[in-house]
Amino acid sequence: MNNEQSLAFLSKLEKVIQDRLQNPSEGSYTSKIAQKGVNKVAQKVGEEAVETVIEAINGTEELLKEEAADLIYHLLLLLNYKGLELKDIVEVLEKRHS
Image (spheres, rainbow, N blue to C red):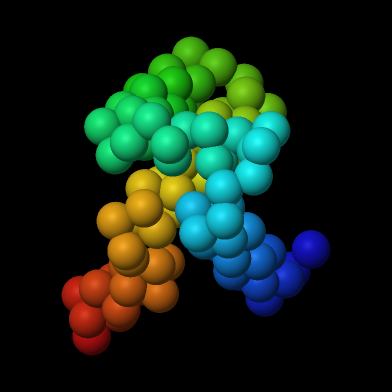
């Protein structure tokens, strides 16, 4: 998968997250955690960030990739829960880079 396909997948994942927030689905992890409120969603971002750091220091490359994926997913969930999108964050990064 090239970078463009990877970025397209993140966009697709974000759309799934947005749909689950707007149309909760029984059995959906995204719907379940979102229903617990912003504190729980934010807590999951923190947990996954810590787990990512631990794997970066002491773990394997495979476990680091798994934890980083969990972190990105939960961050996308938190951003969308708060009415933001990945593009909003990219805009900040672009401004900082210019």
